[in-house]
Image 1 (cartoon, rainbow, N blue to C red):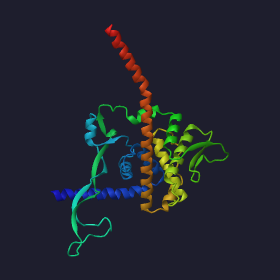
Image 2 (cartoon, helix red, strand yellow):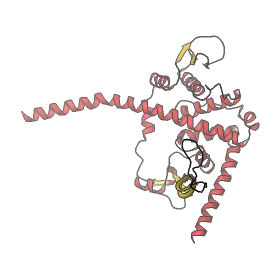
Image 3 (spheres, rainbow, N blue to C red):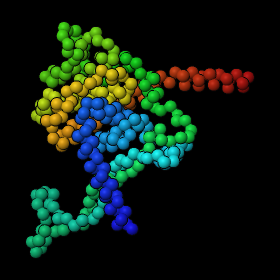
Image 4 (cartoon, rainbow, N blue to C red):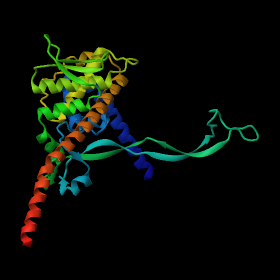
Length: 319
C-alpha cells in the first residue's frame, strides 16, 4: 500500500513537472504572459512554478488557500469543486557516511593505516509534494474580512507611492525635463534614475518602478544581459508591482515578447521568470512594510484622541 501511494505521489509530481514545462513555453504568448504576470501580482509570495500551475488550472483565481485554512475562516469548499494542485516543499534529512575533511588543508583526513577517515553526517536535500488549494470562488460561508491588501490600496495616493518608490530604490531618483519620447532611464555610470518631468501620475509611477527594476537587476557590468532581456525583466517587474498596488496597467502590451522568447532556450526562460518573480516579490514586500508603517502612523492621532476622550470620560464619571 505504501509503495502504491509513493508511486502515485511520484507520478503526480512527474505530471506537474511536465505541466510546468508546457506552461513555461506557452506563457510567452503575449496574452498568456499578461495573465501570468497578473496571477503573480496576486500571489507574489508563491514560487514562479506555482504561479504557472495556478494560471494553468484556474487563471481567474483571486485568493487561494488550503482546505483547513478556509475552514478556519468559517468557509467550506463546495462539493464537487476541483482544487488547484501545486508543489509544496517537503525537505528530507538522512544520515550518510562521508569523508572527514581537514578544514586547514581541504584534504581528506587519514587514519593510522593511511585510509580516509569516515563519519556519519546528516544531509538535507530538497523535495516536493503535491498539495491542493482552492480559490475563494470555490468556497462558501461567512464573508471574508476586508483583506489587508485592499486596505492598503485605499490608503495609497501619488505622493505617498512616489516617496515609497524613492526610498525603496537602491539609487537616487530625480526629475528632469527634455524633448523626445523617452520616459526615463537608469544611468549606470552616475548610478541614478532620471524620470521625465510633467508626465501623468500613473505614467510617472510606472516609469519609476521600471527604472528601479533596472537598477536592481542590471547594475552588474560583469554579467551583462542583452537589451531585450533587460527590457522584458524590468517591464514585467513593473507590471507585477503596479498591478499589486492597483496602478493602471491597461497600456502594457509586451508586443515584442514572442520574438524575444522564440530565440531563448527553456532554461533561459525559466531563469528570467524566476528573476522576475523574486525581484517583484522583494519590491512588493519592502513597499508593503513602508505602507504599513504609514497606516500605523495615520491611525495614531485617532488612537491618542480616543484615549484622551476615554480618560476625560473616566475623570468626569469620578466627580
